[in-house]
Amino acid sequence: MTAPAEKDLGTCMRGDGFRMTFTLENDWLGVNFDEMKFTVRKRIPPSSVTSDTDSDVLAQVTKTGGGITFDPLDDTQGAAAVLSDVTTAWPGGARVYWDLQGQVNGDPKSPYTIGRGTFTVAGDVTRSDD
Image (cartoon, rainbow, N blue to C red; front, side, top):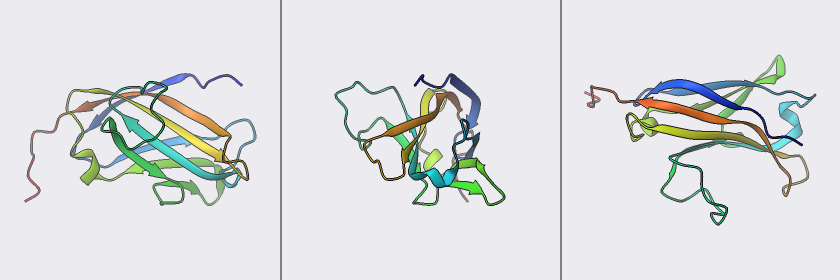
């Protein structure tokens, strides 16, 4: 299986909610995955990193946690959303890396990379919530 082409999502505003939409291809449906994870990192980790808890992880949302959802009328159309209270800590001006992986139903040892790429974080000027 070949890796999906890298996709540049453009620019995201630090401190704003972040939403990435995606389309499942190759006859996949959202119900084919027990779990999905959308992860944002400062850099691509070396192969020796075996978890997503290190300090380079800027955000991770999951299907089971409600951060990844699917259109109830079209199970190929999905979205990953990161709340603004998380993006507030993202480094302004940085180019960051993301990927979207799914765990195929009944096979937790078989992750499937659905999408991957980069985006730039634009620094917000207003830093106060009040």
